[in-house]
Image 1 (cartoon, rainbow, N blue to C red):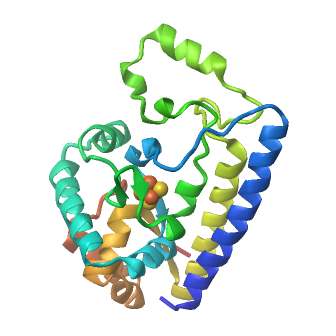
Image 2 (cartoon, helix red, strand yellow):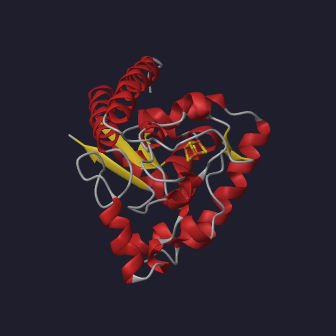
Length: 235
Ligand code: SF4
């Protein structure tokens, strides 16, 4: 993958952050509050996805302790993947069994400057405990009350995160996939920690240079030929 692709990522991250600041200001002007703050890692126990170029950017920035932490996380994830029989169980494993994102330390993001668009886009319109709540454990009345409390004109209903930033992140992820497709003839999307690991520790970039069949073989060899962890698109 060309280094110019990394510039495509950082340019979009900068644009995202400035646009996001305007969205937060507009939401505040309408009477809303964004509750995200330093030291809150509630949403970092979700399954986080990103595009391959975003993962490459993070992979290039990691030091040895971060890589060791990532390696341990990947071993835990691999051990659990066989029990992820559907999306619901895959998401639940992240929430309940993996201990949060491998880049989260003492409730702070250690890759904050290069974190992916999906992380940047999660801006909570509700208090932080809702970001780590397991909705499957709530009663029907509690769920109903939560949903009635949401500002449907601003959130990505039925979630409590701001819709405008989620839509913008989706649009920019599509653009990055398109740029990668034009450059490599394929685009990769999937689990952020898995993609970072495959770039940093297994030479995913080499497989991409060898084409789509090499990428599919690489995914099988590394144990990540699983639609929840790695998706490959071609023209
Ligand atoms: S990359 Fe950072 S912001 Fe994103 S889930 Fe991990 S710790 Fe949280």
